[in-house]
Length: 328
Image (cartoon, rainbow, N blue to C red; front, side, top):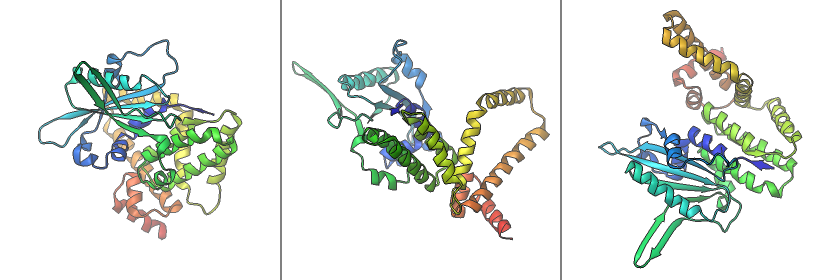
């Protein structure tokens, strides 16, 4: 069985707000989430050029600028490392990242190491050096996935907990058959849907679950899809949202090239100026898709009006109106 830690780079961008809430319970009291986040991948690459001969990186780095809620404009840098192996140079590299980033930006830095390896004895949390009366110590946040409690993560309402659960599943994979892994992946998918997260985050998490923990035998990838389809087709199960999201994911994957072409066409159209009638038509089409999704949730789930409004990005009044319409 294989796993791909490089997927953390994408999932961290998709769920960065949840990442902050997961590890820092008071994050929203300190940081201004409304100002968004700035991912500094290019800046990080300039500080640490990648080795073109290294096709199997052992870690994933993210550098993100976030804004605080203080009266004067300030910002801090969140440096994240995902470490998938017992690297003896890890402590030094974390310190090296710190002083290079600080030297360039001159702003406060918080560093975070997510350790996804299977060695329970590997847990570096600081770098220290002493020589002739001079001492320096650099402490950073560390999170060892192997030490986490599966039940606690399962109960969490934070989407990032599913990322950690998927990583735990990967760590356990060597102790189970591919049949058991298949069952666990499907079970984790069901739990993901029940949480009622936003559609975009469900899609991102499904992709992470599907690609992060991979089977050795390709036939189990086919069985995984078959098991999902079988689950979706079972009667009297509120899985409409699952079907919606999976179909959307398949459609995106199959028509990726076409969609890119459409996006480019839209961009060119915007530059030249799209006539008002077409713009209104597009807006009406988007609203129609939202209403269709609301109706699907009303028919296939037992979510309350507030949750459906949140998932479909509409007002509660719109949900209530469509609920009354369906009851007639």
